[in-house]
Length: 169
Image (cartoon, rainbow, N blue to C red; front, top):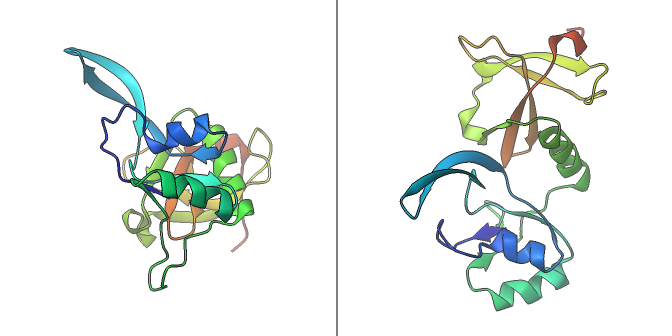
């Protein structure tokens, strides 16, 4: 979904939907924000207009009719077909995000084929069974695994090298 409210709105759509008992996820990051002349550390959305809501179309239609700044996000090239993320893809993405304290979010166009490393499987730890590609960033000593929602958003999460098992080529 899309939230067209300003970034400094008192009640953004993700808070409104949470108050109305919808399951909502919006990618968040820590940032220094100035409020009343003081800088404070606060969690803010990575992409202010991006929301993931788990619900039925009928339940969401009522809320979209009430809030003029809340819209469906539509597929490119399709006519009035709202974007739907498969439950399995979203659960995998949420599990990965919840496993780390500092996820790194990327848009699809930000990750180039040169940045992808080898295919790996995680064996042991909190992410046991995850499969994906390693993210190779020049100059970085950290191992990061890329988990994606196809054509929407990717997250790179830090993993322990002891749990990495390389996939055969």
